[in-house]
Image (cartoon, rainbow, N blue to C red):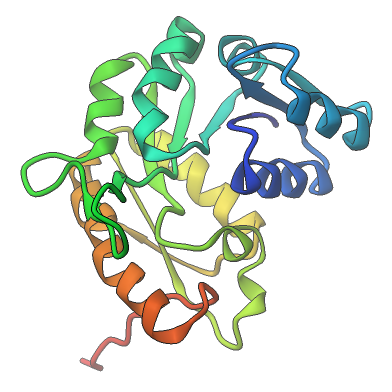
Amino acid sequence: MSYAVLGTGSVGQLLANKLLAMGHHVAMGARRADNEAATAWVKAGGERAKAGTFAQAAAEAEVVLLAVKGEHALAVVEAAGDALDGKVLVDITNPLDFSQGFPPRLSVCNDESLAEQIQAAVPAARVVKSLNTLAGPLMVDPGQLPEPTDVFVAGNDAAAKETVKALLTSMGHSSIVDLGGIDGARGLEGWLLLWTRLYGALGTAMFNLRLVRAEG
């Protein structure tokens, strides 16, 4: 399977390195083809690692992971343009607004989600919201927690969700909850209001949600 990771920050690097370690071909996308972080990553990553613009990276991939700050997400997918047509686009972004300090507010909420805006911006892409409820290290290695926890998917394309579920399973996620259509991202992004409070209270990002169901 070939993947693209759009974004050169810490989360993008974690995801790209994990995918390489799993044996996949990975292209890292940035605004400029000569981005220093992406160039350094390719040098360290070996023959299965490539880099380019957002559009160039997306064109190389079957599955694209959007790993940028929420405030930049729409501009990035618009820059990738029709290179995203038909591709599974895993949206891990969150619409966090830190303009009034910590904890942040959501810049999009209630009647819409950032994932829905992304799907509207690139209607031919097959957007699946996932992994946004986890800190980067737990996205790629959930086994760092002492017991299994839950991860979620939401999207309009059933086949795309199955592709993402398979990826999540291969990364070590054993409990995957399907929240239905892309509007399920409203709840996933809303979780960050509590997540950031928990981060402040616990002093660590190394935690996650586990659903405990009643029997019967």
